[in-house]
Image (tube, rainbow, N blue to C red; front, side, top):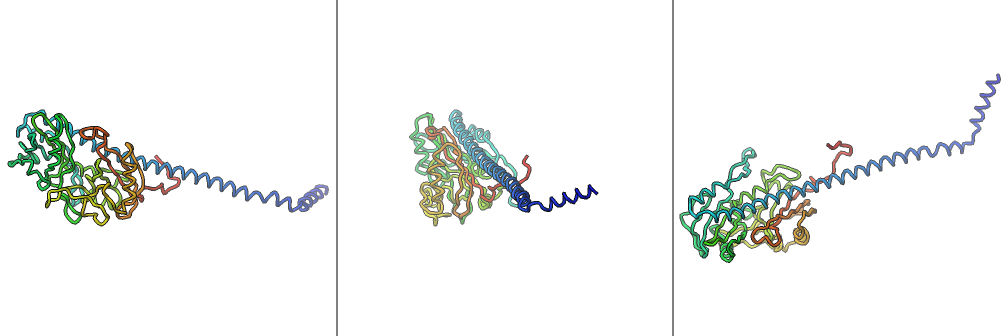
Length: 376
């Protein structure tokens, strides 16, 4: 009986508790729970933003390293070109010796079979032009693609029509003994509606020896080969124009801001087969496809901001520059610009031959889509 009375008193005390006390006890619990949920959500969000930022920074670094690696390959080609023209001047000038020299300098380039898109490498001699000239600029011995030319040209016969650069020969004549000078790309200009004319194209260097001038021409296909090199996001580049449309491309600019290699071959400097003179660079956007590009000569609108950035920042520093810009088609790209270092010939003063520009579509340049994806 006593136990029952105590139980009833306890129940009565509970039911007689002030309801405001219950509210004060219970009301903070949902707020506390929501606060804890918000805290964990914000912490996870901040962590994801940090991971995303680090991921994009990593993409930046990969893009920078790709541009630097290709710039080093260009430097290596030109360093070897300078060394080989000096070595050529040490051997007796004769057809047998030139033949041996030609056959001893062989590299490899990538070849794409358009029938099935298969890729293979083929051996290719480095130099498709080997010439000895007297100190008046007249040829004494010339090999083209390893074959001795039966007819030799006087300086007055040198013209872009026959893939000869008279300005370079005259520059070679003016050099002091032991000096060398790099010329511009020697090729016929091809407009957008034409097939690219690659036959016989080369990048030359001339060396002044005591008894004459030695000229070597690096086969232009080695420069074209560099445009096919894998780069972020590492899509295959069998078709350079298609890769360019996809936003994945490489091109090369020299120290005078001419395009010397580009997926759009009509942007590259070259001689007119009709006049024998270099085709003047495009100035307005309407000239695109009919004239090569020189970044400083451009006066159009669509590429103005992009080219201003190159001229006023990217090309003034000796390190990699990364930024975003639109192309002629209006598509945004992330660009990585790396200097091509060279301390030979006329480039001994500032040590820079030109620049490699590597492009990547912004669609491939993004944060990871999965928030909690493990990274290995």
